[in-house]
Image (cartoon, rainbow, N blue to C red; front, side, top):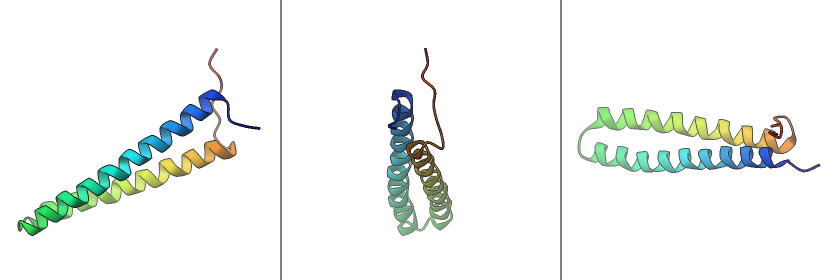
Length: 79
């Protein structure tokens, strides 16, 4: 049985937000590299820690989207 419309929307939203986190982490890594090259290692390390948080969030959201796909998470139709 396929996903209903609200479940499809939820899965799409979760995947989209996960993608946003991934893109943000990549951009932040570039910022961290520039900070490091400029000699600002403390700030570079702080930004890299943010990247770890973003990657973790991306992984969790991707897993939630997979759970929606397999029916472990359901969203009822709003009437």
